[in-house]
Length: 98
Image 1 (cartoon, rainbow, N blue to C red):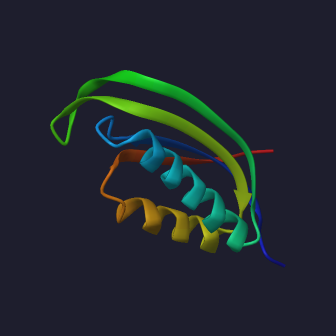
Image 2 (image 1 turned 180 degrees about the vertical axis):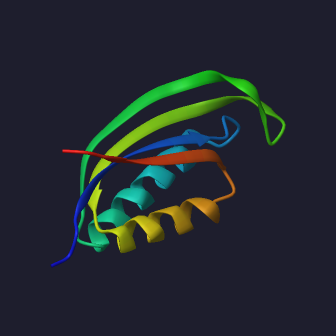
Image 3 (image 1 turned 120 degrees about the vertical axis):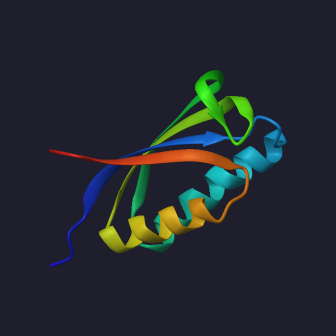
């Protein structure tokens, strides 16, 4: 039996990236989750906010929270995609309990 877990991912994107590119990053994550037979249950865009400390010489970031269900293998692929995306300043994934 394949374990399907619920996850919450907070994503901070470089505010210098164009809005279309920011949307493209979120769309790519959605496609990656759905390709791995997961489902995106919510996308909450928090917008531009000040960072507590500079990350990659940026003092602000564009925050997005994505809630989804997926297998651990799909989560690994999502995190791999985020790591190789230059505009992503930081991300954190939490597994939610039932």
